[in-house]
Amino acid sequence: MAKQIDLQDYINGIKSSDKRMLGKAITLIESKKPEHREMADLLLKEVLPFTGKSIRIGITGVPGAGKSTFIESFGKFAIAQGKKVAVLAIDPSSSINKGSILGDKTRMEELAKDPNAFIRPSPSSGFLGGIANTTFESLLICEAAGFDYILIETVGVGQSETLVNDITDVFLFLKVIGTGDELQGIKRGIMEMADLIFINKVNSENLSKAKMTKTELSRALQFITPREKNWKIPVILGSALEKTGLIEIFDKIDDYIALKNKNGTFLETRKNQAQKRFEFWVSEYILEKAKNNHHLENSFLAHKKKASELLSNPSSEASEFVNKLFGN
Ligand SMILES: Nc1nc2c(ncn2[C@@H]2O[C@H](COP(=O)(O)OP(=O)(O)OP(=O)(O)O)[C@@H](O)[C@H]2O)c(=O)[nH]1
Ligand SMILES: [Mg+2]
Image (cartoon, rainbow, N blue to C red; front, side, top):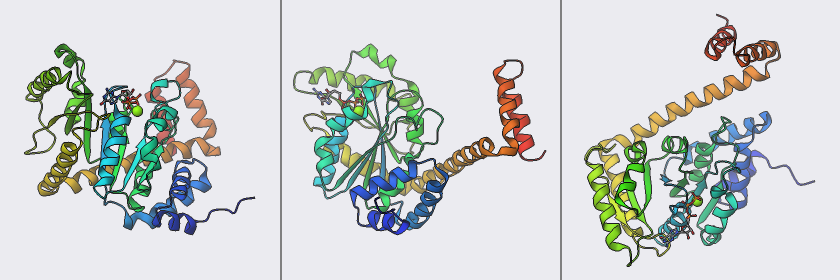
């Protein structure tokens, strides 16, 4: 039997940026087993002093926009500038084939081979299904291992943007060139979240069309207040495949972080995110405890069953149950 990995092994592995151990540490973080949770918590406490120093970048765009390709190209570009890059790809569910882990892995093959890169797909079940999502905690592990950039790919559907937005410093929206009227199809919420926009798949043939898209986008952006004071959302043309426009994105990210630091919002945002994160874990732990507490089990199940019979409101059943839980 393989030797049990102890806390110190994890810590040493993370500090020496050992990719295999990093992978194991993240698996530990993702585990729902109580004994793993306990160890994961100890590990997170140990590495806390080494976290916080990376730039956390969320990347969104419709399926096929080129997010994974962009991450691979941008990641390699950043590494060429002397940075270390970690990628956390969020896989929605195996039922959506387009975002499959396998596909992403092959697309990021070259980056994955680079000693200064680390790529980790998140588990399919862990994100949108109401099960604890641990991407933020995985991100902390990567930071402690000394990665300068953490890139997180969203699936471009559902709540994933909001969730990724809640753990990142800067949000990049990848847009594919389209006809002008396609702009109406862009969810306003996404535009309001974007700090930078990259129009992808631009080449010499479609350059004029791309410029038109840029003009249209810039016009639409006039009606949107950037999240950051004194920031004008840049629209950059480029190609993830042909590796153009990457330097502009790299520089704009730098500018954006510098501005956030100047405005005092960099830390402020992270503090707000940490508060949300705290609330997330409180509800996770309470639900878990409620489900596992044998004294309450009947009660939890009884209320749940009543809700399921459609004879009372799920909200009323939940409220009654929680009141019991806290003894009032
Ligand atoms: N011509 C061209 N094709 C590109 C470019 N960037 C990406 N592609 C292609 O577009 C397709 C989708 O790219 P991905 O990087 O997988 O897109 P994605 O947004 O990660 O897609 P999902 O993860 O499935 O949502 C692939 O066939 C890429 O090769 C580009 O700049 N130019
Ligand atoms: Mg992808």
